[in-house]
Image 1 (cartoon, helix red, strand yellow):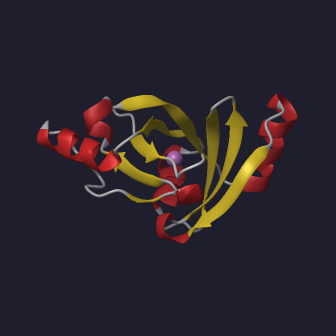
Image 2 (cartoon, helix red, strand yellow; image 1 turned 135 degrees about the vertical axis):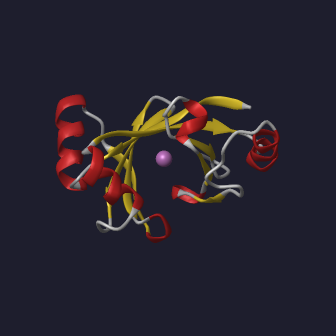
Length: 136
Ligand code: CO
């Protein structure tokens, strides 16, 4: 089940420039920053209450976010829901015919487990499921 909005993912060209923008305009400071080689991104989390804005800068042009920026430009990239029991939820969604990009959860930032769902199954919204690590 979806327990809340964990974060809004925003694709950016330059992480430091984006951090200055979000901090300067809205006072949002990064609580976490991490390079995720498997996903080809450097990510920063800005706390907004119990949710986050996740800024994503590509590690190169031939990465998912790099290709996204080339075709669509910067902006909202995905919406992430916080879930409990991600493995069972993925099975349930697959059984319903929801098109999963990740049939198995993989490693996300800050020790979380994540899975993406094809935008075709959510009205062209890229959805991410996040099961946070213990303590987050
Ligand atoms: Co995300």
